[in-house]
View 1 (tube, helix red, strand yellow):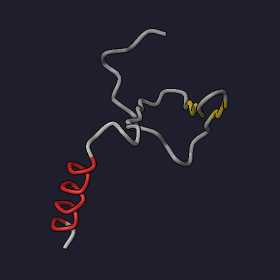
View 2 (tube, rainbow, N blue to C red; view 1 turned 90 degrees about the horizontal axis):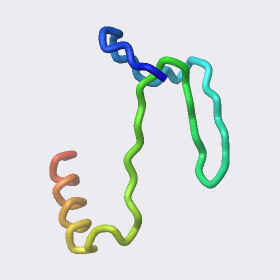
View 3 (cartoon, rainbow, N blue to C red; view 1 turned 135 degrees about the vertical axis):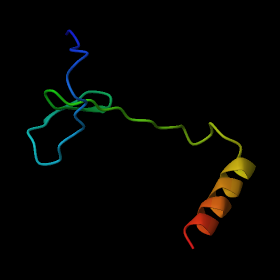
View 4 (cartoon, rainbow, N blue to C red; view 1 turned 90 degrees about the vertical axis):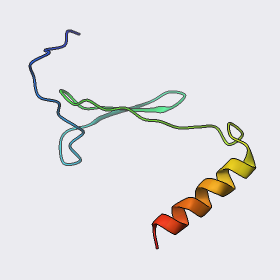
Length: 62
């Protein structure tokens, strides 16, 4: 697959056609869309750091 460096970046269109395949993880593909996912495992961060971030988030959302 080649990349056209002059094409505008187009994100995932929730109303467009989506190809979904399942193997070990679900894979969603949409022609012409740029997309990525980020995830972490439950034990990838110390619980103290998660608590701190949750507290900070709660303050921001007030």
